[in-house]
Length: 242
Ligand SMILES: O=C(O)CCC(=O)C(=O)O
Ligand SMILES: [Fe+2]
Image (cartoon, rainbow, N blue to C red):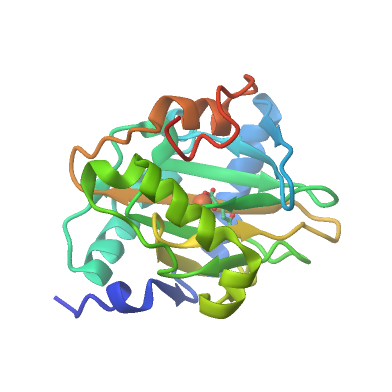
């Protein structure tokens, strides 16, 4: 097993995880899916960068996009475990475990956030103008276990969100979407977002999330309705338990 380099770097970029031909095949399958199913459009205005994207959730992927489902449970999982030196698994929460994000040009962007999971891999399927992922790897000071939704964690997160603190202590990485490119990150410690998509083509990528076997997340229900439904959220920031 290789050294768990991810722990020190917080993220890793791998070009050509899959080749361009495979990207075209997956894009074709997503295009076919879209001819019979409407995408779910999510619009959550925020100060600064908002969340404006469309998504195919994991339940839909399992039922309709078997190649992506297999990639999630096979090759991508194996790579993640090799990179982390851990035995992580796909999430029990299938809807959140694997997503296709579709971001049309013009107004799409993805707000700053941490993911709920230990590891997320982002697989880009095409090249577009704009739509770069911005990340601050290993930026968060994450408390242990059930303190992760404590007042102290909220305070720490609030301090790290300040632009001045980010400038002083953060190391920002900018990743441009390229077909076949994979970014693997320690997602609950990596502050990340997506810049507005420009040009004329939808930005399409696959989000693959992993965690310890049987992991459960306190923020689950509220965060799922924020990310995967058009319901009004119960809290302004459901990344955090109220
Ligand atoms: O599309 C990206 O580059 C990142 C999306 C993201 O952070 C997410 O879906 O949680
Ligand atoms: Fe994310």
